[in-house]
Image (cartoon, rainbow, N blue to C red; front, side):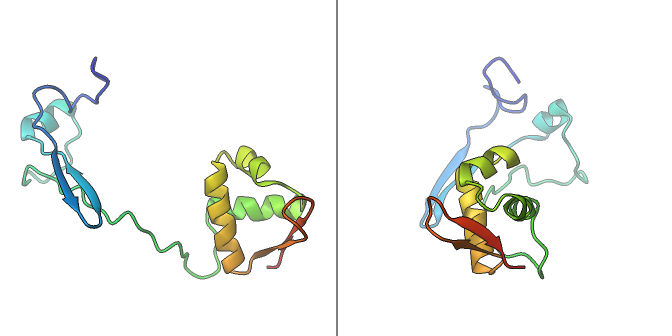
Length: 131
């Protein structure tokens, strides 16, 4: 980190970011010069660069996995639910090192894929692993 809290490639000599607003969101591009890349030592280029990156991503994912294989967090949720059917979302989040919201999203995907289901009420019920 530099003294201004930014990475070494972002300092007062760096070009200003380019901010674009589109219906899909706000895009921020960080133009850079070859001197900045060489100074930071992060260059992995063929020597031909445009000097700019678009920085554009849709920010969306399909949320689907190929086949029946579960992602690491989803697998951890299923494993813990098998061992502790009455486990809570806060407990899952703590044990897996994720936010409660991340766990909720994974649980919703697992329910949609019919890997798990909730038996009983939100408070006092339990999880059943169906697969």
